[in-house]
Image (cartoon, rainbow, N blue to C red):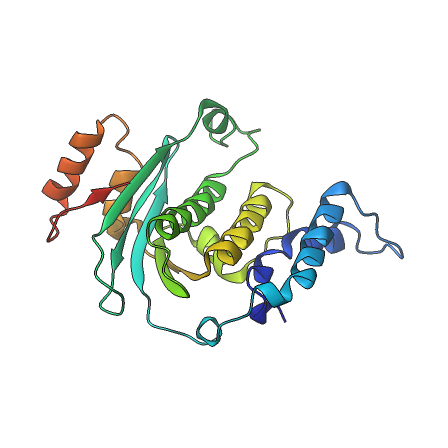
Length: 230
């Protein structure tokens, strides 16, 4: 039934973790996080009539927007381009630096005990990119196809779940809320790092002012009508 309930397919991570963490238990211990997730499902059940499922979200559709995202240790960024299947919109590019406490928690050779992986940040970039686009272009029943050079993040996004209760589980829960509130379908596509140059530039350009960033986009990635930076 998750296919027919907007946002539901991103709400299985916590339950999956409980089953893996207690494989031989005859009774499962429900931590507060599990209780909160059960309340999410209760909310879905109680509000089915206010969120009817449009037939367009159940069958594959040509994408209304194509884009790609990337995350670095400094921040995330990406872009969206409308396709011929949607009304005319200008291409947009976005970027957001990570605050210090996020950067300091990133797992690295110098910080092997960190709590956040690069794949977590790449998944956050996918969700953030969708949130940015839907706020600017609130087109009903939109289909978004977004590239990522992180295979794990693309798989988590498409599968909708992950077993560990790490940041990625919370990001998927946020994505469930986004898809339900803004009415869109997000599909992630793996793209090699060597071809993800535009999104890579957006996630590593925080040394540039907003104007210089916009000029660098048009200089390096020329597009008719220019880029709108959001």
